Image (cartoon, rainbow, N blue to C red; front, side, top):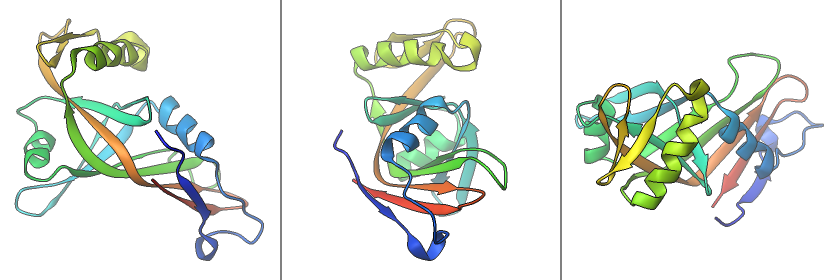
Length: 169
């Protein structure tokens, strides 16, 4: 992954604010326990739902069942927004990632993803890679994995000094 162009958005930042480094934004993505994905329904309406995402090799990965609404939405329109951060007013950093959700079916990537997901939620998900899918050992369900490489991202710091940073890839 190339390092993005980073710009502090002055109209939306305190006079004393500095840009959030991409390394700081990556740390928020990597450490997030929960993210929110926004997709577009086939009829054009919005759909937002929480999910667990993994930051790996410069991309966000998530998985979903083929019967879920977000999966139907992605088949019609792969453009997504993933957000994470802190639901607080005066501290923390929120990060927003825009990109396209591309199916991840490579067995080597899926094996690494299964290991990465095992570190989320105290290891409650025991996934394995099989035939281009992720399989949940406890529930027996099959999931489709997706990769989102950022095309644009934003970091919003809260409290003093508040700021907005834009990253362009």
